[in-house]
Length: 348
Image (cartoon, rainbow, N blue to C red; front, side):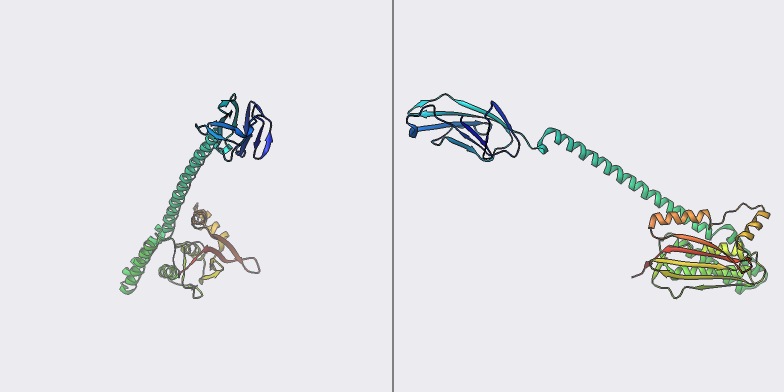
């Protein structure tokens, strides 16, 4: 064996040579043991690991252009006029690329199984979180229903109806019963929905406030200004609990005219509802509750705040509540304002 070329570059001849996976073009140059009758010399060769057949050629250059990774041994002998030289051999190995190495395949399999495992765990956790949020949302709906149909409201509404019956005022009694039934039906109907038309929310609020007017009977006035909002949907049962708090904790304890205003607007992608009353204010209301030894947290407090957090996690968007105490120039309480923000959807 005179020379060995790997990718057209001469390499040192050794007993065993190792080449990388890119060194696949290999050529061998052999020389005849005799300088006589060179034109009649034939070279016979076999490359074990590649083929099992002997090949013959007159050229002393043997070339393989694209050998696969593996172990090979080249056997060569020269023939001149029926006489054969001794067989020479050359062993070499082309190493597999790293991505075919056993260590890489095992590592890749391990990484693949790890990815599958973590994706599976991620999907399981995602489903658990989804179910948790759904359960929380259902709990928030029940809480909202309870806030709208709490025992005090039902008792007071039935008392109002009873008063009309005792007064033998059949028209007002019939009207109150109809409004009460309508309110219950609408609340039950919309409790399963994630968003409802703004017109439906306004209808619920009007029926509720009409029932409260029947109960308070005098010096109570309210107005709802929706600024002709239409073709939008908002989360149901958000506004009424704040209106109830304004009436229960601010207006019922006030002497004289009781005024409640509800103002609805949109700003960008946020629905804004401002609820304002001219009641006694939160500080005076807290003093009254303290005198009555009532440890009561309003729905607009921790319960509604928790519901807002649940809705924000479930729907995304801007859910927030801001409560402002109103005062005159002398610092006397003149009421309370609630600023409620929530996302909305256009109806197309």
